[in-house]
Length: 291
Image 1: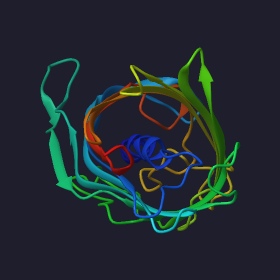
Image 2: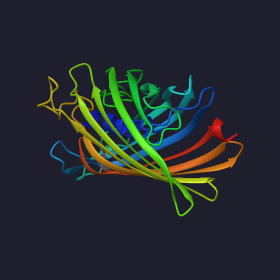
Image 3: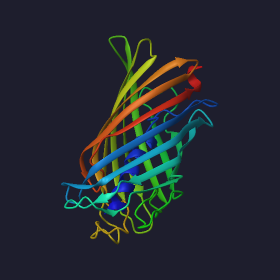
């Protein structure tokens, strides 16, 4: 079960990052780039029945690069790359004697990389832009580390997520705002179950659009159709059949000439085979459209 929880926590991070950008492709020759730190520390997890159980305190820290670049006004390429992924587990101690049963360990490697290709189905400037995105999940992370093989930074499978986004920008009492939604199907390999994804996002630009604040809702449901779907607690399954309903909040502040800083918080209020704790992120970004 430890492997399952670890990969699911990393997976939660990935869905927040990959869904950034919404239905708006970057303009030709423009881009958005971000270096961030994301982390979660948890001593409880959601089981495969949706209840919570305790576990040895575990932490995951990802230092990641995220980028989008407009090849044309309607075609954008993107990448989400955890350049350094650190996973650790504290000592497992006896509740009776406080004796160390299993010593704590940690690994530091690269994580699974996502490559995204977004195409605007509507022309630039459309009132309700719609785009289609294909995201390829590359198994570049480590699937087994530590003396017991229960530390990891990736799930070891190549997946393909097809996603449709739609949204619109508008004014709220002269304040710039936007709303978007997406729906997607994730095809997974190595006998992992396929997944359905859905999300909503709402954001506002304050102080003459120097500060942007957004909130997101993300839903993931497993089709439970993998060859190993009936044994979700096996330590060989990684994140198979993980599910969640999660919310997140992020603030991004433009300092000067497209450069800015951001901070965010996310948590799942319903889950299956994922960590039962909030995650946090901070970052610095460069937006070529705001130079």
